[in-house]
Length: 134
Image (cartoon, rainbow, N blue to C red):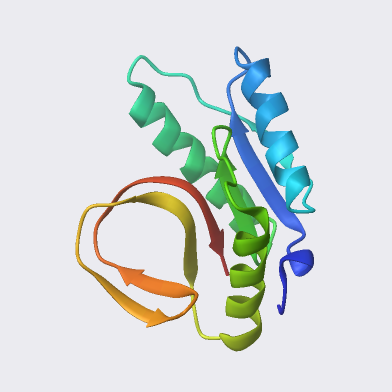
């Protein structure tokens, strides 16, 4: 995998009750040249638990179908600077072959170590909005 255009397995998590967010995430993915497949989010009284279960089910599905390089995003992801995001992701993917999970959006609450101009290693991420799994 050398660039964002090589990512073929793309899933977004979205509740049936949020067609507005479905439209939003499809538009955001389109901005970076990607088209995702919708995963019907698991709705639970505890929303955070339902969200976590949804991520787990997408990962189980990817493993069961032997998918590699899977991008998973939530329906509220927003790409603020498209050119910066795509250039940094393309640069990272081209230069780095030894990685397992690449967090593209989240809320890091701990120490981080700068790896290069495109990537930091985080230690404590409490939320995630998007990630790429090898």
